[in-house]
Length: 130
Image 1 (cartoon, rainbow, N blue to C red):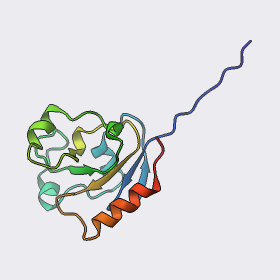
Image 2: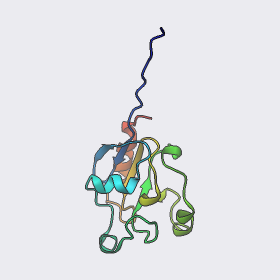
Image 3: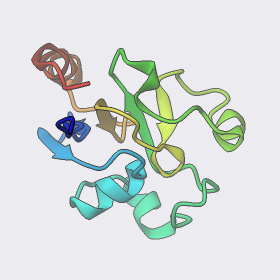
Image 4: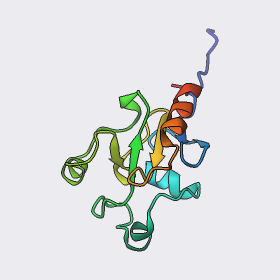
């Protein structure tokens, strides 16, 4: 009888830069749901009172993906291509983003903190599990 080996896949980590938190999640989880479950302030004032609940229609759950691993999230959806047409290429809608592997995220990039460049640099230097 051959011994069976069980391999354990490391759970992805979502590193929320602004909040200074690393959150473990399951592969295939929705980024918006992770952020809200963990108490992250995903929305600005207008978005907090008038978001679409994750349908991709209100475009208020902007995040900026700061990881170099472009495959960390699901591909950009057709909704995002339309809604984010004139936004930076690093921006995604959290509600349309499925986590595939560890990722570094800046919430509310439309109003970044004064020290955002330093926060991003520090978050990327730490490294993440694949």
